[in-house]
Image 1 (tube, rainbow, N blue to C red):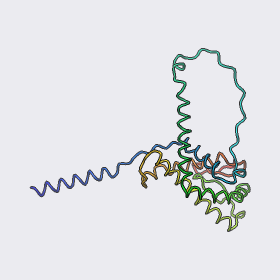
Image 2: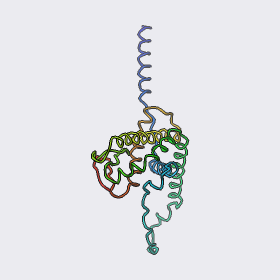
Image 3: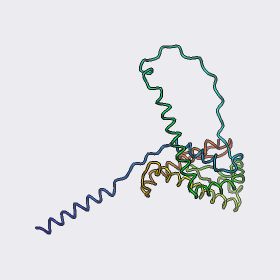
Image 4: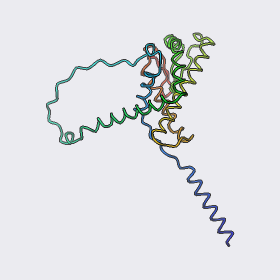
Length: 220
């Protein structure tokens, strides 16, 4: 009888441990802050920033006359500071991420290498020889315009970009005070890559090719 109780106890303990093992921590992904952090890192660390395409600023719109119609009392009661608080929180998060990543030697090294190869890479984008994938990587679109040396350059570029995206995932865990693990990294790595690609798409020049998340290729 005693032996049977011990067996039941051990079986229950194993079940409990197994249940604990599959519990995962949901990591918050601050998409807007991540996007702004990527832009800040490009501004800070890309040495050839004058050759890096910048996001075109939209022309300022003329101010419209104030609406004199009576507004709902519910709108008037909303705290006006709420939107400012959200924007300030996103800006603070972006700064924290950018500073965290700028302190990583592998990130600084990656940006230094990307800066040195950017002039040639820009030529390849201009000629439509390469395009930007949905994960923010560089893909060959026209092999007739790409040499073996260019292919080696593209492979190195993609390694650097993966380093940046992977480091962003680590930085997100750190500012969220989440212990770094494969499961936790996997939660944010995909989103970090998608956001990186979105940032690069917005910075692309007219005529450059890029891939949408659904796999479709378009020319800007």
